[in-house]
Length: 466
Ligand code: AMP
Ligand code: ZN
Image (cartoon, rainbow, N blue to C red; front, side):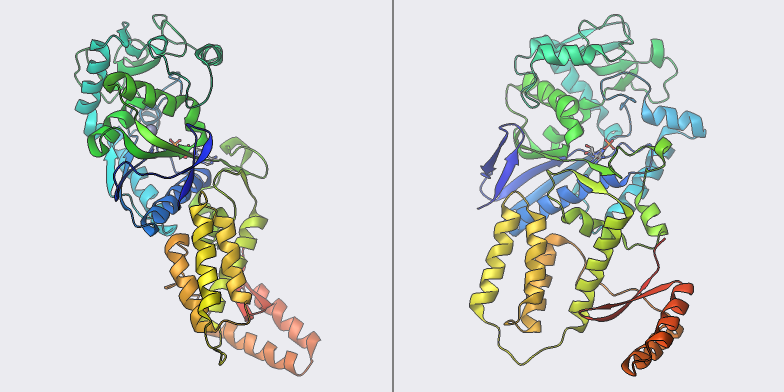
């Protein structure tokens, strides 16, 4: 029995799909004006685990991810500049070039983290007519109004506004008042744009399409309402994103879709908690803004980051430090070493024991994707004295279909022959109790960029991290 925490009900619920076997899953995708940071990637790992868990429960998952390549302003609440437009102007490239470049890097990152690429990828600019149609529908139904600068959704007309975040419209308006309102025609600070005209502050906007309200470009939220409905219908089963989406982006998606069609947008809303770095928010100015490439440049396996993400529950805050990444990297290496070097003692697998492990693992991941518990079970299996290596390996590789640590194909880091030789020599010295000489060789290896550690699964050599 699969249980998932639904932000909408604020409860862990038994998952009941809308159709018996097929599930619609919508994941808000990246805004492709910059590299994704490791916080963003934490959210994509959580969503990947969700998809894998749904598949493991026998569901066929149709997953859609949008790519935001227009309309996302520097503030989620409609103030500032369009992120892609600004980046294009600064770097003297076209918006399409910016979007293509960062979309490619994004998918490369996903592959490195063993994240399954969603079946349907939908760049917002490919679906502008769908977004215009939806905005027209809202306008016709009296939910939208026009100013010389934009077409806005009137939040006061939608009685359920604020249900997802649990905030009243009054609270929302008070919060929105703090935002700079750049259009004097906006009736209410919490109203949000469905369409921006290439007028006023967006007079020189690069991306533009014709519309019933004049040339312009879509607001950010409407792409997700239009794209999810196009591919998954309405309502669909599960909608996901990071917690920062709850209060504005997802609230606005719900308002648009429900107002236009009189039906809920999605049944379950799942949100991943944020990743912080050294206890704080990631920011370029603090110098703690990490991309996956930054981690790779420090000689870490990207899957060590995935392992680190799995060690905490997706609804808990996770504080990233280089030390925690190093610990995850060591654990992953130990796991790999165990799987490649474990010895088969002459004992028979006991179905009662292996069955218990299987049940435990399934119960953990089905309990709102409890990956830390699932990982703990993997280590229990490794330590279990009554189970032969072959059975342990079979169990762990089976679980890896959910964990996604590429354990089947994983090789431990390639170590140069010269380093292997020094390691052997050191081993020999240690056996002869010549510890001082052995230690000198360890230092020599470190000087050459390799760390040697004596683990429960034998001696392990890894490239030094910096
Ligand atoms: P964006 O490209 O800004 O639209 O964000 C992509 C995804 O990353 C969204 O689901 C966000 O909610 C999520 N996200 C943003 N910042 C963080 C963070 N620090 N930790 C985890 N997820 C985040
Ligand atoms: Zn979205």
